[in-house]
Length: 302
Ligand code: XIL
Image (tube, rainbow, N blue to C red; front, side, top):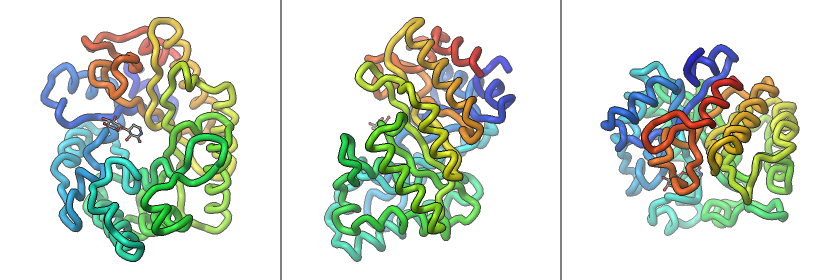
């Protein structure tokens, strides 16, 4: 294949991008997206503050814009994200335990049923573990009010809402073997053992000089795969430039291809110009939509 998406498809994988709906009117943005990628993730449009800004009031417009575009191009859509401590509207933080439990379950159910048949992959819970060596759960409003069981409850609710959807746990700084990924690993092992529905684990893979591509990336993805889940690289970006950045992208692609259960890679944006970390120029296309060395290395590795 001579694009990222077609080359990945030849390897039985997808190659996706995070998409911001407000850039879809820009011809170079949309042209690059349509040409190169065969999967899309809404960068912000399906997050709680956007999709349910007031309790029980759902606004599917921003998400629909991306879903309609992606499906019109034959792309799969990854739904991102149902339960997360960030980009959460204030009303959620004000709820007591029982109310929060019903609000969480209602949120998951309404959104998944709205998108049934159009969005069949979901990040059900995002970033539920703390950084650092403790292996503890993040001290989110969900953790505080509902306790450890909220993650399991979210996955069970998601399975019931759309039994055909694939359900993913997604996190960052879990790419290598470390205390945080150990904690996620124990949770996934427990879920699989007890029959809690989980299909995938997503590894965000936001890399920079403080957080480089880990040497045990492959071993880490493989140990999760050995639990019986798919693994995906869900938010890849790598700060840097030139050959060093290109080599890092090559390593990531090689790693996914070396793990049978690694079914695809999503980069967290189309162009450096609109990256959430634009100063780090972490993506495959520069500000003028020119292919960077990292692009050529990625395509060659696929
Ligand atoms: C980021 C978006 O890229 C930004 O536009 C937004 O301001 C903040 O969120 N982990 C995730 C993503 O799961 O949803 C985040 O996206 C990046 C980190």
